[in-house]
Length: 68
Image (tube, rainbow, N blue to C red):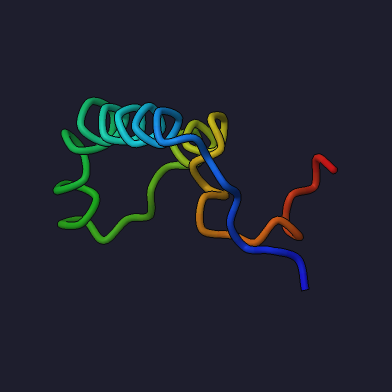
């Protein structure tokens, strides 16, 4: 079974965490309450945006990485 985590330098983890927090705060938080109230899914363009820096794959095993 392939490993499910990748070792990152502590400085890299801090940068990844900071970027993910900024994206959530600036792009998604202002609209999340309305999406919840309307019971609508996150729009496709926003899901694609999350995928562009790799945030959608953070919790997935490496076997799901189609770039290999």
